[in-house]
Amino acid sequence: MAKVMEAGQEARTLVHYETVDGIAILTLDDPPANTYTYEMMRQLDDAILRARMDEGVHVIVLCGAGEKFFCAGADIGMLAEVSPTFKYYFCLHANETLSRLEQTPKLVIAALNGHTVGGGLELAMAADLRIGRRGAGKVGLPEVSLGVLPGTGGTQRLSRIVGKSRAIELMVTGRTFDFDEAKAMGIVDDVYDAESRDAFMEQVLAYARQFTPPHRAAKAVGHIKRAVQTGWELPIAEALAVERELQQLLFQSNDAREGLTAYTEKRKPEFEGR
Image (cartoon, rainbow, N blue to C red; front, side, top):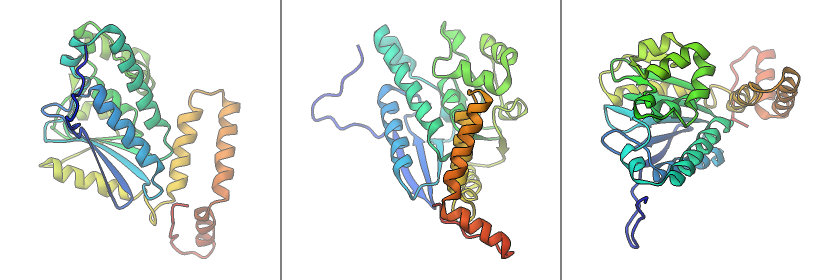
């Protein structure tokens, strides 16, 4: 049976939430490997909704605590103890959480500060952009070695990123690889050199700031994401209809007026994110 928190026992903070310059930073924190449990997924779900509803947040950054791990996936010890029914509902909720992250109309960047394997990579693939720290860890979906499959979206998201044959090969062998190879396959978008996690996070946040006001029209960034994420699986006619509706919403925004006016006046726009 899953462990139940006793009366009077305080819940641990497994996902830290902070905001800096219009960026919500969500940090997974469960040493030594930042593995996730139902409790962590509940906190991550809450943090995603908090960032979604906060009008002052324009970009979400996911990262792991410590120097060695972004996330090593689900807590295997927990899975070994719980019932098959609990495992099913645990995976269902995790899938719902990652879908909520994927569908939130704000740019999501996964800062892969260390090993990103199993469910950790599945979480990262639900982000819009992924940046790795060179030499900090391995990437992969090794669930086959446990006799199971990547069940938090891994089979579907990886195949959509790298193609069916390569995705199958990576998952049936369960091999892990470094961030540079992950970049060559398109699994991560960039790899940064950094001597420490803190230095890496400074670089990631500097990158993320370009998508916040006044530098960029954050609502347009979010709608571009939403058009792609929603339209990707739709027939082209329906996807184009989604695109047109999102464009119409942007035409009514302050930032669109500012962008068009600044262009005609030959000046740099000052966006507000509204």
